[in-house]
Image (cartoon, rainbow over all chains, first blue to last red; front, side, top):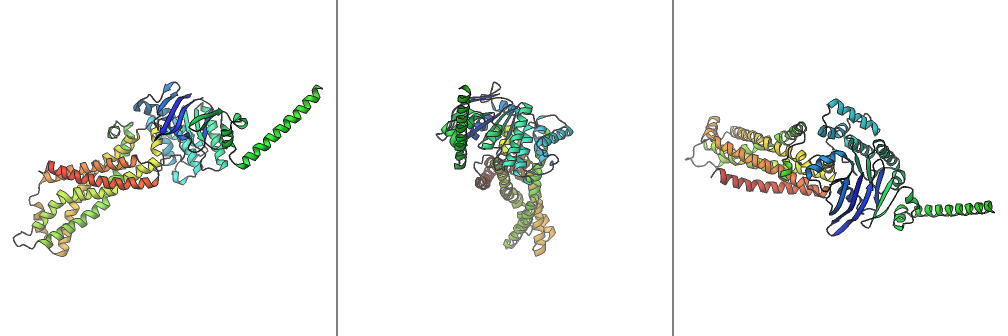
Amino acid sequence: MIEINNVSKSFNNRQVLSDISGVFEPGKVNLIIGGSGEGKSVLAKCMVGLMEVDSGQVLFDGRDFIAMNREEKTLFREEIGMLFQGAALFDSMTVEENIMFPLSMFTKMTKGEMLKRVNFCLERVNLSGRNNLYPSECSGGMQKRIGIARAISMNPKYLFCDEPNSGLDPKTSILIDALIKDITTEYKITTIVITHDMNSVIEIGDNIIFLYDSKKWWQGNNKSIITTDNPEILNFVYASEFMKEIRTSMQGNRNFLMFLFGIVTTLFIS
Amino acid sequence: MLSVVFRRPKKWSVFFSRCSHELVSIGLSSLPIVILMSAFMGGVIALQTASNMTSPLLPAYTIGYITQSSTILEFSPTIISLILAGKVGSNISSELGSMRVTEQIDALEIMGVNSLSYLVLPKIIAAVMFFPILIIFSMALSLFGGWISLLISNLCSTETYLLGIKTDFKVFNIVYALTKTIVFGFLIASIASFYGYFVKGGSINVGKASTQAVVISSIAILIANFILTQMILL
């Protein structure tokens, strides 16, 4: 479980995060959503120590990450996997070498054992047999999946995904979402996904934190986000005119159904 | 930065493989340009010396002597290091800068890898170890270039040129040149790494960092050259 308490961060007197608190449970896909520039990626980077917080606490199963020194953080990060927005694969290495890299750095596995693990991870992300390709030879979706394979190769306890669907077509996005969901529930990982992709929100959002105006504006799940009346959330979820029309029509249908239900109930009682 | 760079590597086998990779990338790949530059520059030094030898009071072997001393003392260690600052410095800086903007360095950090030690230390070691070898090559090739040019232009006999090279030859000068080269190698690799590693922004800034790395390391070489000459030769 990851817990953040009153995390604040500013850049050049511009407050990006103000007193953000939240709990991210294992086995659930926790989403941090919000518009562009609302500090989603900054929050994730603060949580993993790529940026320093101005104040606040980040607890990984009770261990205060902010209070750790550089060595302790380095050691602790072996328990963290991260998928970056651009996948961040090492372009001088093949797919196999990319996934093998953390294994060769932190385990005492033999070459054969590492290869077995690499193949398992590749199979898990439906990329069996692509071992010898270079990242530049892979599509965006493939790179993301390789990134996930690398992130899970060390069996992390915590998985961070920074906009895993950015730049991908809807079909591939759904595949990536399903993969993240499956891995999270299968290995009981505490997964945090930074996204502004509404498909992801609806598909995999077990726990959603909405950032707005540098604050935690709303928290809920993929069911409650549809029905909330919070105007900022509504503006975010139903951003386009088309989506607003759909919502109006849904509301109309709901009102009509409620009307029908009322009539039936009244008749039944009478 | 340097205190983090020189921390004990996480895994020695990975570190040695990185070092051997950098030896090839920084050292061996610079060999062609060093060969080309040294041979031609040696030839030009010998020809210019010969063309200026108008006084009958100066013995003919002076051509060889001047070629030898200017090559060993200044041309090979300093000029070739300046050339390497351009080639290797920009290479290191742009490589690390690209890794920074594509979040590859962040990925290393997240994995728990000391990215500075993993990326920069092998480059510094490769530069410090291989640059002296390149400079020895440069010295030999420069003298060889001088001999070929004199032979072609028929300005000096082989025996006279060899006599000039042997005249007042001091092993200490070689030690001095290699000491300078080690310092220059360290400066080039560390300054270029600094500018590349701490790039902020996108590809334009990678280019700027690369240029800055070359300019600053060239200036650092010139200043270090002056200080080392004061310290060692005087």
